[in-house]
Length: 293
Image 1 (cartoon, helix red, strand yellow):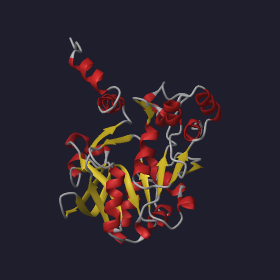
Image 2: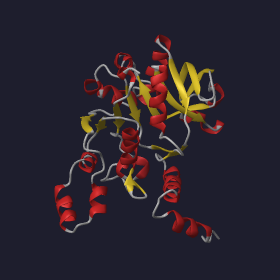
Image 3: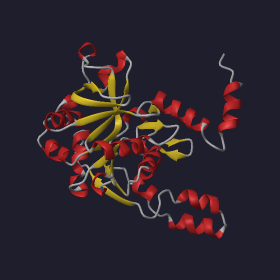
Image 4: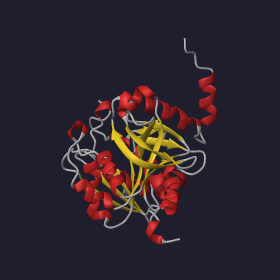
C-alpha cells in the first residue's frame, strides 16, 4: 500500500454567511451552531480525524474568528477546570488530538465553492485531499463517510464524490451525476451537471458534501469560468476533470442531514440526540409521550 494515496489533508470551506439561519448567524458562524452538544464544524473535523486526516485547512471569511478559537487551546478555561479537578470537562475542551495541524486561509471574495477549494492550493500542494462541507452531517452505523471514501481512494486512486439518491422534485438543487454503476456502491462518471432542470437531470443521484480530489483539480479550477449563481462551481471543474481522467462517485453507508436548512438541522438534532449516550433514553421517552395535538 503506497503512502501516496493515503489522504492526510482535508479542506473545510466555512466562509459562507449562513443567511438561512438569521438571526442566529448574525454574530456567530453557521458552522458553530450546535447539534446537541458540539458545533457542526467539530463533527466534520472529527469525521476527518477518524479517517486518518492529519492537516485541517479551514477556508474562512470575515467574522469567523470563533472557529479557530474553538480548535485552539483555551488556557483560562483549562486552568480553571484543572483547579476544580473537572477531568471530564477538561477532556471535552480539548476537541482535537495534539498531532492534528490546523491551517486557516481567508477567502476574500465570495466566489463559490470552487473558489474556496482553490484557495487551499498553497497549503495542499501536490497531494490528494478531502473536502468536507460541515452543512452535510452523515450519521453512519459503522465507519464515517470520509473514512469509507478514504479506503475507497486507496483502491481506485482517483477523485471520488459522495452521492445519494435524490427525490425527483429536488434534483434541481443538486449536482447530478451521469455515469455507469460498476458495483453496489461505485459509479464511473461520464458527466456531472450543477442544478439541472428536473426533466433534464441525467440521473437521480445527487452530490453531497464529501469529496476526495486529486491535485489536478487545482489547475482546472484556475481555468473554470463562473457558472450557476455567477460563482466558480466545483461541479463544473469536476465535469472538466472527468474528460481528462477517471472520476468516481460513491454511494456511502449512512444517513445524511442537510443542516444548511432549518428542518434538516432539527432532524439532525433529534437523531443525534437519540444516539447520544447520556440523552438517548430520556429523549426517546419524551418523544413517545409528546402530545402533538
